[in-house]
Length: 71
Image (tube, rainbow, N blue to C red):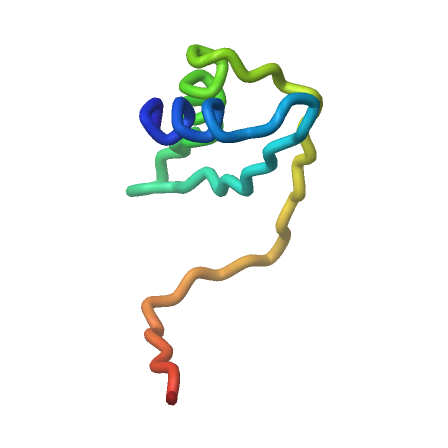
């Protein structure tokens, strides 16, 4: 992820903002914070966090259903 952050840092114009949507996950009933790892990678290359938005989701049930797109 650090390589991705470096590339965005190189191509982003001055005074512009980059936004990223991150979803943390649960694996085997354990909470895994992906967001903190990604944010740290962006900090390491020079990005500054302007703010964050946390969207809470309630009553979400995950399924193993697969959807096929028709072309």
